[in-house]
Length: 264
Image 1 (tube, helix red, strand yellow):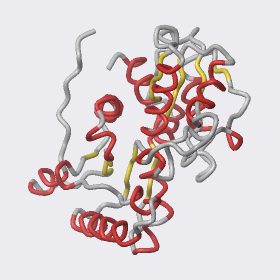
Image 2: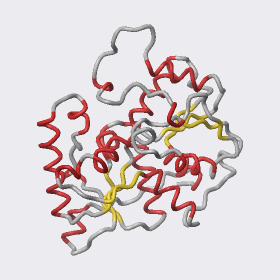
Image 3: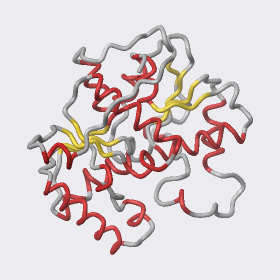
Image 4: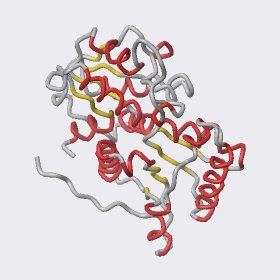
């Protein structure tokens, strides 16, 4: 299939022309720098363009939310980054933010208000679910109809913010074969990378968390493990490789599955 190329609107360029987009698409560190997650950011941008949504990214003006710094205990660095972002949002009159990372979603929604940053924060899985429900996003069921797909709940979407049904509704619009791991929803096991764990060495123990979670998935023989978080994607991909299952099992983000279904 030919790669679809799109132009991504940048907030500064739009404002220079006197235009104000409805949504800020917050790409996040992984979407900007991680080669694997860049594909997820690209897939979601293609979906937004396909839907003719009014959006823009900050581009070079985007920096980290400060979430990893806060989780690691560096409160001063977190507040410096947060205040910098809040000032940029104020400059561009940002009211609605769509994120493709649960960690960005959580900190914008639940922690930035303490510093004066009040926004309507939308997870991309909520957005996709809504667009499917209102009929604007019509998916091709034949693409993944018979694939055995399981979904790994990210901690910061699930337990932290109660977003369990939205991603599952999106996946049910893609396949008739959505299967659940024994530990799912509020009982789902963490991928092992959240809370700053991504950036430190493993602690002593019999088994790493990502291996345990991969084994949860392998028990039900999926063809696809669907994720909706950059940390989860890294850990699930590593787990699949660790178990030598790359040929049998693929890890896709929900945005990628939707984009593939649409032929984008």
